[in-house]
Length: 341
Image 1 (cartoon, rainbow, N blue to C red):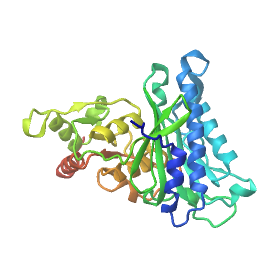
Image 2: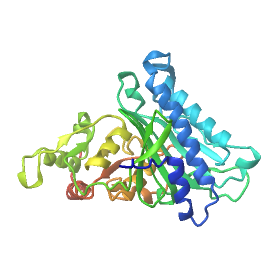
Image 3: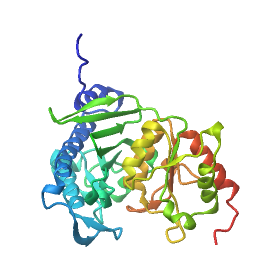
């Protein structure tokens, strides 16, 4: 019996290149650059406990969060790979205050910009829990020369590609170009991402909800009622549902993408705009979830239709299986007039 042929990420992307009317090969090469940096980060993640790469740097990033050493390493690797590759004209990273306009002759006229969260869930690094990388690729708005802020402040629906890498029991890269979602597992024996999860479809419903329930008392009333509904016993709907919250957005979304479920990072009294970044986290993961058949909103509007006005803008987010999204939005609407105070 013949073994099934392995399809590598590079082969798969190259084969699908013809699906783009403006294809020039640059997007293919850009995805290859991102996968190369991901392999380097994966190598360091796997030996983090053996080298001086865990712990904090003693500094905070633009969001005021403590910066881990591996945050810095990952940020440097992705910026370096994208800069050397020369197939994007600019990079916006969650770890940098401003966007980076690349100024090599080839990069200045490149047609793409990249928004990236180099290491999502970095608070989990020191305790050996899954972490990830999230990226978003858009076509530039400016015509030529150095990129501008306008190139980055695009709605999520204008993304041409988005993906994430999860560094877990195995390392996977999941991405979409608006033609469905496919997953690739890193085969360490050959150093290649190989197609392992073709045409991923999120189940219409699930049995898990992902939310930091420790902040329950700070949630709006509709969300509180939804969570209590999830905990009720009801055989017809297979409730109660299980609370599963890892604390790495990539890991929670990846599980729900495969098995069904809902992920919630809402507004609270202290953070009325939520805490997750629109450009680096919410837009790319919403694109993936919707391409897999799920939905993503801020509780009222589709995430992909929101117009960003700041590079590090935040937003509340609800994303997951269609039926579970219907339920949570029904609770939010029914209790919208109820005071949270």
